[in-house]
Length: 453
Image (cartoon, rainbow, N blue to C red; front, side, top):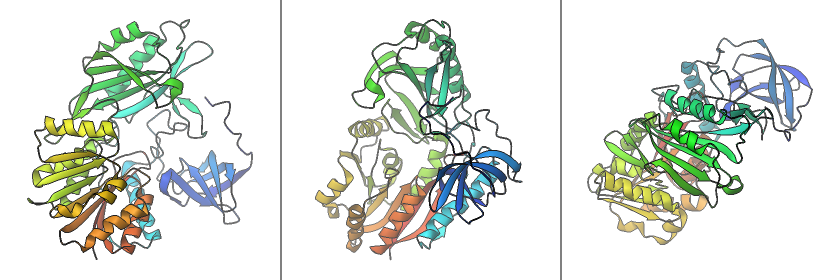
């Protein structure tokens, strides 16, 4: 299904061969004039007839019209919705080949900014499917009265595609979706009336589920029927009705319909609280590998201060806390700081301090020279860091008590940009570890170790 406002594709069709994959899931080929042609859902080696969707002076975007010669690397995607759903780009590539392509893309991303460092072999995910612990589905009512779940249609900026399940989330999460769909379709004459989204969160190591039923007003159609149906699944520990006026994330109101206001997740020996607003790594199964790599690079010793900037709900700092004299976490989102403090108490950790502040402002005002033997961990948003913060951190190189800086990123492009800026200020990327936390997609996590040149 496509939105009425979606743009019309150009009718120009050309034949190209896909040469390689680049970041964000694009395959790249070239037209007869040498201009780059970017095609989603393509595989290196494919010969394709493609239809142009966007033309610029230096490149063209296109979609697959017909596969003329499939690549030797192309496989049949296991998901029936893959061809249109925007949730995955690479289900048509076997997982070992996905890893090779991702590592090549990561190496090329760093090389474009002239960064020379040791790039360790990519760490593969323990499970290439069923790993997501959080996912959203939109509910749409068709003219017939039938209600369907949808996901983003990658062909259109405002389009949706029917998708009643997802192979990236657990079997039980898909069962929850099917029960909800059964309830809302039990009466075709009863409208959804503002009920538009379902979000499921899962504790992979606790088998606890949180379900949010989202509406744009205070009414929840099928409320009693939904509560009765979902009570059949004892693992659902938390059921919310969440009101988002005008479908915006401002002025949210939540009503707990059943169970506990929170669920929990475990990473190694640590237990973490997850509330509806909490940020938690999407792949619980891969978090331990990520945090172990941070621990290895940081080389924290007793007497050290671990400075955890952009600390979120405190998971990294708590994971490192038994090694350090103290952990200081800084985070701008108040609800995340609240969760971090609770998480420390849950785990009987008393050497962690979590501060509600903008990292840039905190560094501008705080005299971090007072901390002993500083190890800095950065885990910023996808947009990365600004130059002021990079300069401020780099100035600490003159301090005798500064040793390692660990940069964790989910965006190789901004990671490479920021590392290049750090190196201009006297820091050197000694080594970097890419990790595949998001199989079947173009996303990649990485951990870099920076030290004084």
